[in-house]
Amino acid sequence: MSTTPATRRPRRPPAAAVTPRPTVPQRLAALPTATCLTAVTALLCIFGLVMVGSASPVISMSLYGSPWTILERQFLWMGLGVIAFAACARIDYRKWRTIRLPLLATTMVLLVAVLLPGLGVTAGGSSRWIGFGQFRLQPSELMKLALVVFAADLLTRRADRVAEARWVLYPVLGVLGISAVLILKQPDMGTAMVLCCIAFGMLFMGGVPMRPILKTVAVFVLLALVVGLVDPYRRDRILSFLSPGANKAGSGYQVWQSLIGLGSGHLFGLGLGGGRQKWGLLPNAHTDFIFSVVGEELGLVGAVALLGLFLLLAWFGLRAGTQAADRFGSLMAVGITLWLTSEALINIGAVIGVLPVTGIPLPFISYGGSSLVIAMAAVGILCNVAVHGRAPRRPPARRPPALS
Image (cartoon, rainbow, N blue to C red; front, side, top):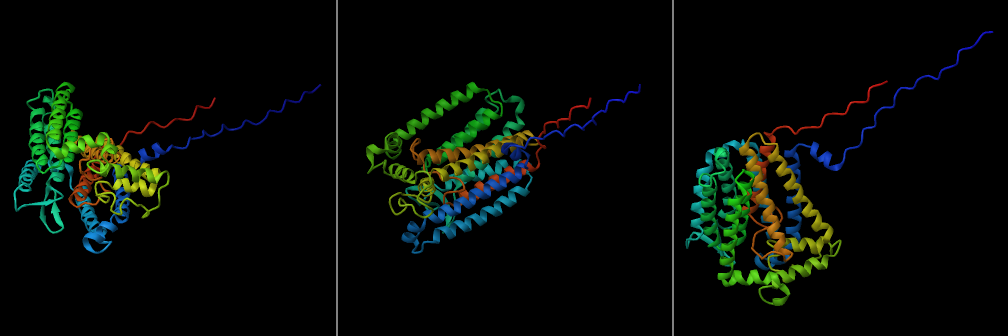
C-alpha cells in the first residue's frame, strides 16, 4: 500500500518590519539647526512687518502725514538687518574673541556719549540713542552683544577657575554693574534687566557654583527695588502693574488699555487691521505694546502662534549650543538665546500685566532700528555656531529580527 506524502504549505517570507512614522519633534530634530534658525527668524520678521503695518497707520499719519512712513522705515531697517544677518552668518564665530575688548570699550564709550548734552538723542524722556535723522544707534542694544562675547571668552579661558569668584564672577559682575548703571541713567530699566539675565544665565551655564550666583542675584534684586522705588516715575510703574485697574487714567492707563485690547480679541481676533486700540487709545501700539495688537487682531490663536515661534527660536538656539564645536561657541549660543528669549518674556509680561512696564521692544516684531539689526546679527552668529558644530547623534537603526 503506497502512501502519498503530506503536502506542505509553502513557507511565506516574513513580513517586512513596519517603520513607525516620525513625529513632528523627530522631523524637526533631523533638520539642520542653522536652517531651522533661519526659517524661524524669517517667519518672525515677516510677522513683525505685517503687524507693524497694521499697528502704525494712525500714529504714522499723525506724525508724518502718511500712513506708510513707519512701515517703509521698518522695511529699510529690515533690509539692513538681513545684511547684518548674512554677514555674521559667514564670519567664523571664533573671530569675535579677537575683538571682545575693543567691542566692549567702544560700547562703554557710546553709553557715556548718549548721556552727554548735544551728543545723545532724547525722545520720550529718555536719552538712549546717538546719531542723526533716522539713522540712530542704541548703544544699550550693542551692549548685549558685547556682554555675551566678553562673558563667553572669559568663561572659556578660565574654565578651570570657575569656582573662584575673583577670576570669573567679579570680572563679569564688574562689566554688568558699570553698563547697568549707565543704562539706568538713560533711563532704561528693561535693558538692564535683560543684561542681568544674560550675565547670570551664562555664569550658571559656565559652571560657576550656585551659591555665589544666588547671593549676587539677591543683591541685584534689592538694588533694583531700591532704584525702582526711589524714582517717582519708576515707582508708579512698579505699583501700577500690581493693580492696573486701580489707576486707569494714570500710571495704569497703558496696561489697562493693553488688557482691553487683548480681551477684545477672543479666540480668532477682530481681523488683521480691525483693531480699535491703536486709534489713539493704546500708546506705543507699534513698538512696546505691539503684542496687544497681535492679541486684539489675531486673537488667542495668533498670540499663541507667536509664542510658539519664540519657543522654537529658544529650542534651536539651545540646540546650537549643545552641538557647538567648542566651549566658546556653546556659551555664545546660550548667551544669545537668553538675550532674545528674556527680552521677549519681559516685553510680553509687561503687555499682559504680570511685569512692570519697562519699555523694551518685542524682538523682530516691534518697530525699531538698531534693536532689529543687532538682533538679526545675533541670530546670524547663532547660525554660524550651528554650521561649525558637531553633527547631532542619531540613535542606532533597529535591525530586523533574525529569521528562524
